[in-house]
Length: 207
Image (tube, rainbow, N blue to C red; front, side, top):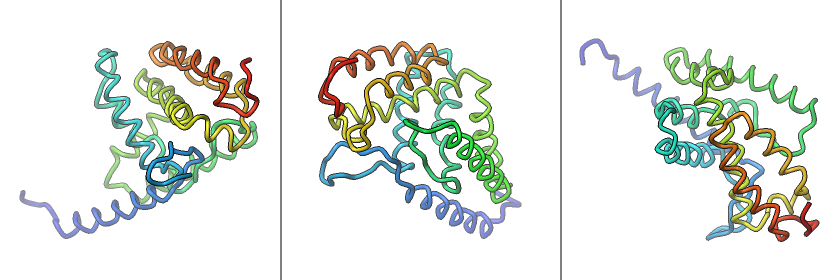
């Protein structure tokens, strides 16, 4: 291709790889089911990949969704955490939510400044944060389902570790999945399982 500065592109590829390595270093509060390594937390990279794959899979069931947009939202939805860090969704106060929003807004501005040659990435993040289309709403609701799935597979490991009660989990997931009609219906299946499985929580009884 004429006019392409391959040396510059190669350097920016290195810069992007460094950025993605930072993303890989961010551990979430969610424990993965024990396998070869016990007590291992999920990373932001793993979470985003899992979310993208799950969203891609679900798009066949919901053909009204733009598959390309859904996958791009899933891949980029947490990139601001490279600069803002991760905070557990369950149990946050309103003040903690406010601080989180401020940090993530600053992080997005930093990404936009650093990646003026990759506007599709930062535009996608901004569109996701705006939650103005059905694909963004879908991905955000699905994002709240995945940690719950890890907890079911790990017998409530994260919920037990942080002594999170069933009522708190159910109320939060009810609220966060409600905006997406597709995910809200799927959540009801998991909701019933959580309500019926006393081994997932320290209190050991249904609400």
